[in-house]
Length: 348
Ligand SMILES: Nc1ncnc2c1ncn2[C@@H]1O[C@H](COP(=O)(O)OP(=O)(O)OP(=O)(O)O)[C@@H](O)[C@H]1O
Ligand SMILES: Cc1ncc(C[n+]2csc(CCOP(=O)(O)O)c2C)c(N)n1
Ligand SMILES: [Mg+2]
Ligand SMILES: [Mg+2]
Ligand SMILES: [Mg+2]
Image (cartoon, rainbow, N blue to C red; front, side, top):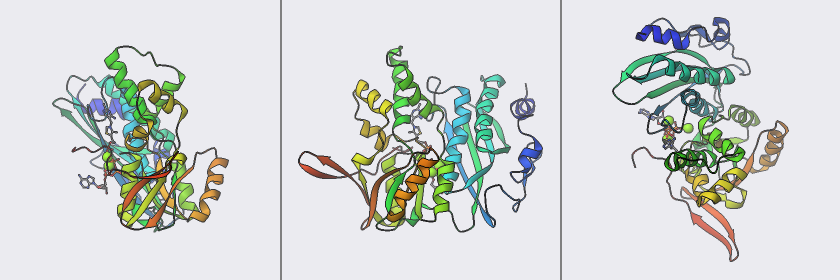
């Protein structure tokens, strides 16, 4: 199959013109470029809105390998991690452009499976796939996605908006993806899955099929008391540092309030690892970390819970030099520990 037949094989018949039209698309895959109506009505978004644009890339050996992810998972997660950046601005995802660089030996069927996963994510979150690019790659598979979204003009939730005295909030558990990755890599080394079971399946799912917090971002934006927001890709500590630096204040996290998934803690125990390492520095959680008016945090939690969504109040902000500290309760009393500005870093 040549390049053009391959693209058709991966993408044709997936999303109807009408379905794409409802997401502002006037011309999708097939021409030199796609066409978008910048003023199309978007369901759930009050005009006037602004466009939100982001891109994220996944590289074989860096973000996945043959034991950690199926082709369907790669496609799903490549889009999900992008949607997460739209969610982190409080936006609604709309369209995506997908670039793939494919090793020559990889047949078109495996790439079709990648697109099965990509479209599964696109359909779940209402994202129109409007185009992309295809090249060969000398060795590794690379998937780069550009995503667009819409957010009410002037309302986007930035990293820089935190105010002293805010509550620090988190929209889901952290550390599960890192635990799932550990299991998948250790499984390969041991050649056995002695620890497999329902609990491990949850961790593997968190790593392979993260669920971007679009609904959570929209709820936070609508409350008008959320001051800053970020998604957790590089790790909780690293994202908290980003908010601290962008907003120019200090962030304190209460160890006791950090959500600990039971399966993650159990697996960490079995693997002899401190779960806090995964929770603070693991990354790829794609939950949202933000700050909001302290007085509205409890009500926000009630609103989230009434929709069946998790919501954790994990810390507070204060005026001061940008820094992140962890407040731990010990038998000797309260221990304040400065958290390193570390997380996943591509150049370290
Ligand atoms: N190569 C690049 N050229 C221009 N801007 C870039 C480049 N890489 C990143 N950026 C910009 O830098 C900012 C931070 O990007 P970064 O990728 O660190 O955030 P993120 O996507 O939230 O995190 P992650 O990639 O870990 O999910 C964004 O505004 C992004 O658009
Ligand atoms: C095989 C394998 N080894 C390591 C990791 C861990 N990992 C890779 S990139 C990243 C941060 C998010 O990426 P980005 O900053 O590019 O958005 C993390 C935690 C993995 N997923 N697969
Ligand atoms: Mg990025
Ligand atoms: Mg982000
Ligand atoms: Mg990163």
